[in-house]
Image 1 (spheres, rainbow, N blue to C red):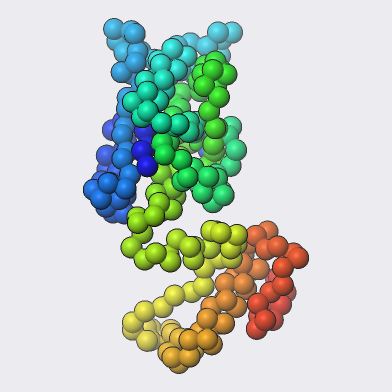
Image 2: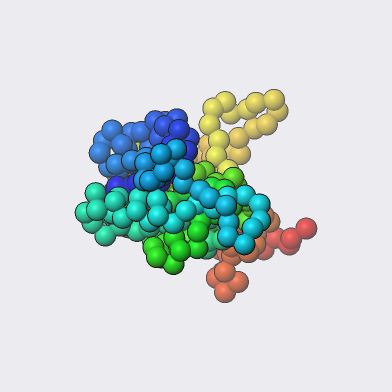
Length: 242
Ligand code: 6GU
């Protein structure tokens, strides 16, 4: 998969791109991430890409020409059907379902906004998929773009070490339960012991216990994720909410 990032702050990305899972995926050729500075497409000798809003008001607006032309240039470089995503608090909310959709395309172009926003004609002309990462306001789309990349690349075959680990994630493939608690050595620390059952060697009982744990945690913390029509796991007694 190819990912093109369009931003006014390309310096925000190298640290993130060079770490851990993403770096491994890049060096193994599973993803090709390229960062582009929108200023490259400015016609202005000072590389200005923003201007004062018509009608007045505070802040600056990103101009239509450099943004539209940068996206067109990158689409041509990719030479395939690219999906254009605009990171904005006005977009549809990012969910695992949206992430799965984005992970299925050959090229993603992530357009990061700043200032008071884009000239509306950017949106009218390019018709991007507008995405928000949550109900709060960030200074720009860059962190949102990192969130999208982070969530998308773990769904690309071969990126995760253990083939099952993305399938078993709590928000994947219709599974909407929170994770069960995990433990490793030591068996006891400051009076906190590992639950006996995990040391029992009874794999069926362990699987049942984990299901119960997941279900109860979800019921207590995120009851909104549970499908009221679905039944709880056999062994899980229905626990009343506090
Ligand atoms: Cl993607 N961008 C900005 N600027 N603010 C946001 C956001 C994105 N998602 C939530 N708030």
